[in-house]
Image (cartoon, rainbow, N blue to C red; front, side, top):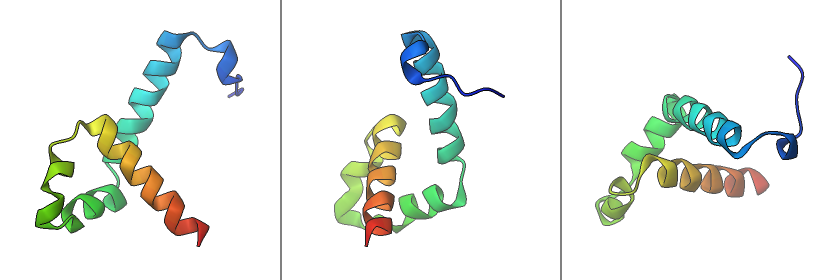
Amino acid sequence: MAIIPASRHSQSDQNQIWDHLKQAIAATSGFRRWQLERSPQDAQIKNLSLDHQVKLYLRETLETLAY
C-alpha cells in the first residue's frame, strides 16, 4: 500500500482516515483502560465526544512517552 502525503488527500478522505483511526484506537485495551482509570473528578472526560477523548488519550500517551 502506497502512502500518499496528507496534502494530496481530500478533506473527505482525511476525515474518513481519522474516523477509522479513531475507531481503531478506541477499540484498544489501552484506551479502554485509560477510560476506566479516569477518577470521579474526571467525569467531564466521559462526557466528551469520542473524538475529543481519543485526542486527549493520544496527547497524554505521547507526553508519557516523552519522559
